[in-house]
Length: 67
Image (tube, rainbow, N blue to C red; front, side, top):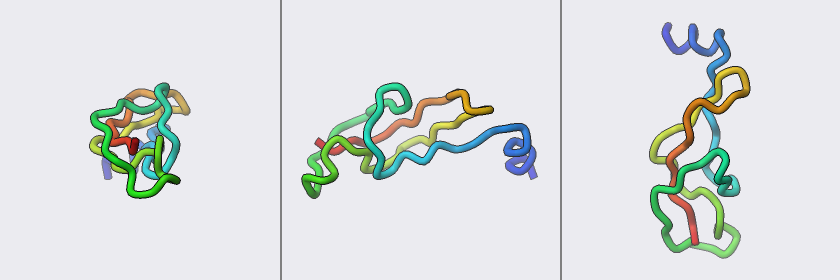
């Protein structure tokens, strides 16, 4: 019920996995070797979700980046 109420007020979770690493939206916790070259510089795992409130970033996503 709380989740639905927050979403109706404009709270949206950020989708980060398999997207390009962006300093404006992500906080890199660690870097690991990428399994393929296509995943270099991309977010491989999400440690903590980021959130938007009415399209304004209110919490950075803490992520693991492939190098």
